[in-house]
Image (cartoon, rainbow, N blue to C red; front, side, top):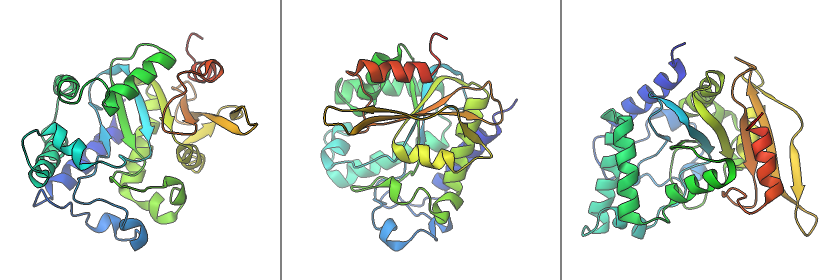
Amino acid sequence: MKRSAITSLISHWENKFLEQTELTQYTSGPDYSLVPSNIQNLFRYELFPQPFYGYLNDDMSEDIFMPLLNPGPVSEKQVKELFKGLDYDEAKRQWNKVIIERHTKGWTKEKFLDREKEYDLLLGPSHWRRKKLEQVQRVIGGVSFLHTVELFPFHSDRWKAGMVSQEKWFRDMPSTQLAIESIEEIAALRLVKHILGVGLPWADILKSYPNKFYLDGDPVFLFGSKGRIAHRFFKFKPKMNSKGLPIVIYSGCSMNLPVNKREAIDTLREMLEINL
């Protein structure tokens, strides 16, 4: 079976980035015309969107696929660290240029793997992608690469995805539809080792597509020392193929995985069907 949804996702964003005429401000176009102005004001259009990351059209069988909420805030320091010796305005241009090239120049699997090594050299072992991959490895074991897709593709300084994840305009956006269809396809075709999402809004939105996903069993809640829910776990399966990969969504007090909570780790591993 061909990866039709993934191909559509890649082609959509390739075309969107090819439409950009400058490197200083992203032009969103009609796809976001229905987004309320108070939400659009949260977007940082001077930093280009990052809808997904990874070689989705190549072999991902030893990798993890992680749905996330949005690319989040990016500081001036973070941008300049990747382009040492440049002032902030020029560093932003180069930042955006790399994003465009990633989506329009057909980065290969080897290019992505080389880029990971460059991040390690430029940013050190504590940069975001390295920390997240190490969290995954501590929780579920060895995986080769971290692929991500964002519920909302734009950087922002303050973003509450839960505010909008059930809004009609949000569900009608092509970027939302393509992300959902790609997750369905990756799960149904078992294209990766595991699918582990972070953020409660992902559970809400997967529930809102009952024609594509079903909740496999009851959610699991673990409580903290003060008697409040500290960890939430949801396990979905694709209706396209009930033998497909589970899509596990974890929600805690932050966007990190529970690397120091044995019961939470065991719950994640059970829901991901590890060692079954």
